[in-house]
Length: 231
Image: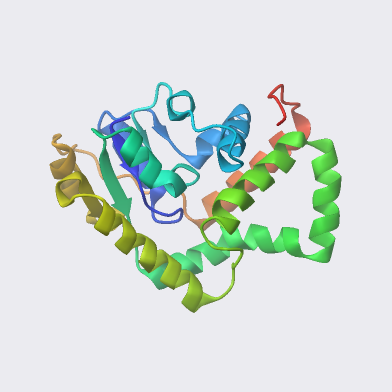
């Protein structure tokens, strides 16, 4: 592990993943890796519920990690991989809040409704992976990061800002880059001591992309039986 992403989801983490991979820090672990390989859900569920903290097994073969669930454990990862540099992806807190409401929290609200709970119960019976994924993300992100709050703008932007300050206080300046993907290649390449590529900085995973990924993932969960072990 050479680069640890400490930023919240919806701070350009998919663009950062593509950028890091393009710079040679590949592959870069992201929530998308968890969604594409359901066995990884159970690794994180074991971590979230205190049965394991085998980081080397989780990140075997990876050169970097960004996004949740990894970024929820930035302290543990920074300690476990002391030679890795830390990139804290950030954006305007209110724009981050709006993006969360249009994507992650939108999905959570659907499940929390009366009809959503009934639909979820049916889908969980059809797919253990979906039940495990929902439990994992709720434990790590919904409850662990946001204490169950998904609506209050003032509270959530404070959590965001407090997180940024906590990372800045805990990680030595020479090991940390506070990075907005709008800044492009230069600060990232300077921090990682690599040449600036000739192509434009990647821009991927807007809200529409996210919602398409969720629909595709739910379909895969319901149509493919996982052989992953259930805790």
